[in-house]
Image (tube, rainbow, N blue to C red; front, top):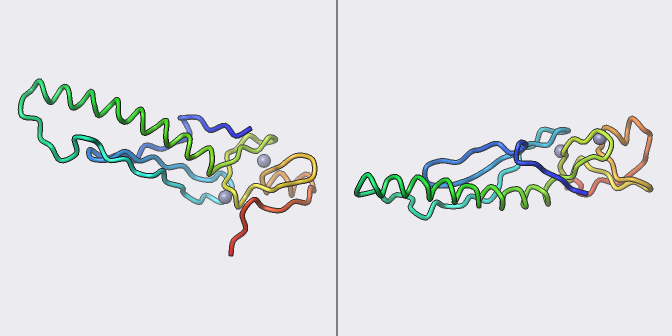
Length: 119
Ligand SMILES: [Zn+2]
Ligand SMILES: [Zn+2]
């Protein structure tokens, strides 16, 4: 089962948009979530009260964006059942018995085809 936790995602959010990144434990390739624009981006709060509200709204939208990014990451990454590292589709092999990351497949001498191949 694919399982990506929040701790693996790096927060690359700015005051106007929410974005998270993660890199493959095997090849180091960086993956970025689809950026989500903050609903109040570019709007300056007119009062102190509005500022507090905007800040709270920002936190809430960030949580939602994080959940979405986690879902996206679960599709872009695979967790190796042996070493438990999250690896990208290029570094994850479909093997006969158990699908493994490239490093484990080599170590365990299991032949397999990557989920995705470099063109
Ligand atoms: Zn990779
Ligand atoms: Zn592995």
